[in-house]
Image (cartoon, rainbow, N blue to C red):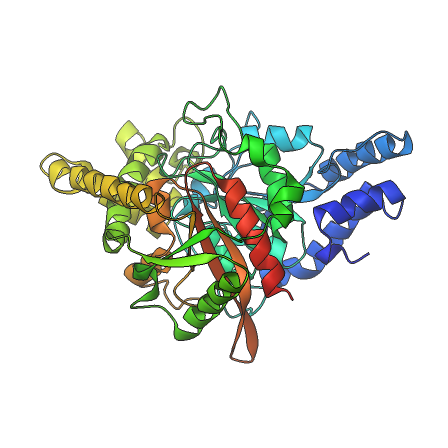
Amino acid sequence: MDFEKLTIPEIHKQFHEGKTSAVELVERALEVIGKKEKDLGSFISLDREEALKAAEKVDKKIARGEELGILEGVPFALKANIVMKDKIATCGSQILENFVSPYDATVVKKLKEAGAIVIGRTNMDEFAMGSSTETSFYKKTRNPHDRTRVPGGSSGGSAVAVASGEVVFALGSDTAGSVRQPAAFCGVVGLKPTYGAISRYGLVAMASSLDQIGPITRNITDCVLVQRVIQGPDAYDSTCVKDKRNSSRYDLESIQNLGVKGLKIGVPQEYFEKGLDKKVKEKVEAVIKLLEKKGAKTEKVSLPHTDYAIATYYILSPAEVSSNLARYDGIRYGYSAMVDPDKKTDDLLSVYLESRKEGFGNEAKRRIMVGTYVLSSGYYDAYYLKAQKVRSLIRKDFESVFKKVDFLITPTTPTLAFKLGEKLDDPLQMYMSDVMTVPSSLAGVPTLSLPCGTIEKDDKKLPVGLQLIGNYFEEAKLFQVACAIEKLVNK
C-alpha cells in the first residue's frame, strides 16, 4: 500500500476488498508525518488518539459488512483557521495560541458526518495574511519539491501535507489565492469555490467578503468528492446559498468523461503579458493547444480592469482585517498581557495595547494600520469607496466575458515557487505573488488550480499551476474541463 499516492476511490475500494483497514491507514499517515514533519513543517498540532478512535469505528462498520460512504476512514487535515470543537485554533498567531474552540465549523461537521478522519491542523501565514507561509508565529513551512523554497500561502501547510503524502486531502481558505497559489507551487489541486457555495461558519474571519474554504487534493476526482460533501447552504451563514446550477450536474462519471469538445475557452490577454515567467507561459500555452486538438475552441478575451485588482484588494482586504481583528483585545479570549506580572497593565488601554503589540506579528499589524487608515474620516471616500466601485467593475468584466465563453484559462502564478526569505522583507513584491488569483476572488467566481507540468530549476523539478476560472456556481463545469486537462497532461 503506497499511502502517499492513494486516491479517495482507491482507499474506498481497498476497505471493501479487505486489503487495508482505517486504523492501518491512520497509522500510516501518522508514520509519514513523523518522518517528514521536521523537514517540512506542515502541521501545528496533531490529533493522534482521536484519529485512531475514529478509525476504529470505521473498521467496526467494515467488520459488520455495512456500506461505507466514499470519505469514510480517509485521513485529512484542517488549516489552523478552521475551528474544531475542543481543539486549539491558532490561525498561525500567538494571540490565539490558547484559544480552544467550543464548536465545529460547518465543514468539519459535514466531513465528520461523512466519516472522514481529522489528523491535525496545518501551519499557515498568520490570520491568512501572506503568500509564503513564512509569517506564522510557530514555524516556516517548506516546499516538498525543494526545501529551500516556499510552499506558497497562506494555506501552505495544507498544500504541503497533501503534496508530500502526509494526508489524502486537506482544507484551506482562499481570500486572494491562498488555496490556489500554494496548490500551484506544490503540484496539487486547489479549489476556490464560488463565494457562498461553502459555509464560512467556523472559519476565523480575515476579510469576510472574500474568505472562502476550499479543498486541496491529489487529483481532480478527489476534489469533486470532497466538494460535494462540504458545499451547500447553512443556517449559520447567511452568505451561503444553494448552488442551483451545480447540484444537478455533479455526476462524477459525467465530469470525468464529457471532455471539452465544443466548449469555448477564453484566454485573457492581461494574464499573459508583463511579469509572467516565459517557461510558465509556455507550459500553459501547451495545454491550450492540447485542448484545441480535443475540440475546444479558443478565443482571446479581455478583462480590462485586471491591472487594478491588486491595488483594490489591498485597500478592501485590510479594511476588513482592521474590523475583524479588533475583537482580539486581550480581555475576552486569546493572548492577554495581563497574565504577565511584570507588565504595567493596570488600566484597560494598556491591556489592549500590550496584548495586541505582543500578540500580532508584523504583517497583521501592517494590514490593521492600512485598513484603519482607509476607513478613517477623510479617507473613506478617497480609498475604500473608490475601491468598492472598482471591485464592481472587475466583477462586471467577468460577467461580460462569460457571455462569450464557457470558462477562462490562465497561469495560476506568474513565477515558480520562490526562495525562502526572498520576498519576506518586501511586502509589495510578496503581494504581487497573487496578481493572477486576486481578480477572481474580488469577483467571487469559482477558480481551480491544477498541475500542468514541471520546470527544472536548480536541479529540482518545480510544479507549474494552471488556473481555470468559471461562471458563478459552475464548479461542475470547471471539474469537467480539469479532468480532461489532467488526462492530457498525465499521458
